Length: 247
Image 1 (cartoon, one colour):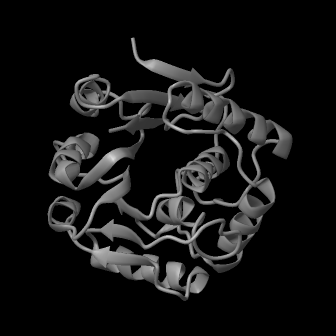
Image 2 (cartoon, rainbow, N blue to C red):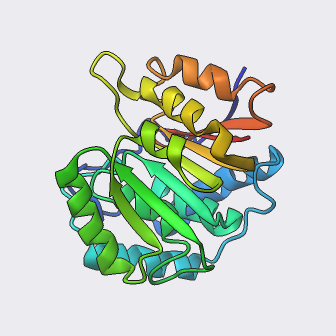
């Protein structure tokens, strides 16, 4: 059985996709849900601590609210907080996010190192988006928050990009779609292409572990196999879910 963290209200916790900044619950309730998830990741040995600077996170959230154009998003406030906190705690020097649409998912990871609320300095944070128009929007959004260029957007096929990436990858985020018949099943192809680039102990994040679980069967079997990953936890805070694994 997969190691799982599940909030009691995950199936009732819903957002309006076209209202990305709308609050869904009291701040203390959101924080408690994420704290529980982080505690599970500490228990699994994926993170060294569950502590993060909430004030810095809220500064990041406000920065995104003020600068990003987000046509729609499935990244709930809980998921945004969890992604940011994981990066703030793990502090990956090099991160690749595959399938980032307008950049909102990407900056939820990268925002711990750039822009308002940053808690550490990174070397290279890359968001990969195969659609050139979406990549251009993501680039505009990210540049508004991070003029330094540490966080950057590339219009490319994620499989090709990670296979040819120059350097090691400390955190890999997966949210891409493959061919219509494959959908989120492309995660495994991307992971396998990136495998030799992943640092020992690298964190691998896969969005949609709940609502796309059927398409992700082969991916989830792979990361939950102890011969491939040290640990893997299914984070069910909302209807999308997040599989958190460590190489």
